[in-house]
Image (cartoon, rainbow, N blue to C red; front, side, top):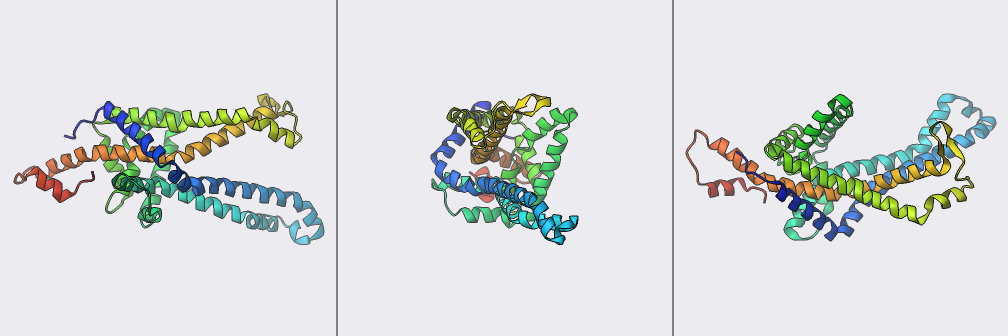
Amino acid sequence: MAETVNTKEALNVFKDGIKYYTKHFISWAKYMAFPVFGQILGIVLILVFAGSYAVLIPALAFKYPFFNDTLNVLAVMLLVTLPGFLILLKAFWAYLIAYGAINSITANMIKSGNIYDIDAHKALITQNSFQFIVLWLLISILLALGAIPLLWIPAIILFVYFVLVFQAFTFDEKPNAINAFKMSFNMIKGHFLPTFVLIILTGAVSCVIIPKLFCFLVSLIGLSTFFLSALHIPANEMIFPAFKLNALDFYNIIESTSISSIVTMFLLPMRSITWTLWYKKLLTGYRRAQRKNIKQGTKQIDQQILDRAYGEYE
């Protein structure tokens, strides 16, 4: 039976997660810059190039017969937006890779006290790209099923049990998507409540409190009024009458959603550090439980010898 880890230890892990994140904040921010802003740049380029091209289509069609064919127009649209799509995809993949690489970086940071050789940590994930993609596909399927209202409670329960899949994948000698789910489930078994508490705390701070704080600070600047006046759009002009949304309301929704998303993505290291520490906390008990199962029906072996033989992750 796995060693009991209580809620108090979960609170300590939560505090340590924040500590390690803030201590190396600059390094984490630099690492997340391209994965986050690269996606934004890609989207902006797609919208700018697509919008500019759409405005020019009538003039181009009048001057060049080539643009009178719908397929030709669509083909050129794909070409002009291709740079944005490539940047978006590259940044998005880098963000997905961060879910695994940050775990390895954290483990090394705890031992050495520094963050370095980030490319080597990313390579730890990219060299197992196929299994990592399978892992994300399985997670996507579970998230899609969890969006169904009737499955919300089962989805929440499964989310708790599978919260360590990225850590299990990263630290496995032979990473395998299915094994990562199995290991996460077995590690959380018996530690559901403290894990659930840790999820609530980590999610509240990194996905709600800090993003809302940034939204509040930006609202104090008055960016919405400045932006609308620069575009010569009256703040009270109705944009979506059916929803009773004027220009200012609509902009505020876009602004808060964008800022919240950006800040939440930038705080991925805080979440990953916390779950790596939790993985470390649960792993000793998990390994001991495994050894007890192996020892059943065999000659009793000194526990210290087993510990050295397995070289458990501390």
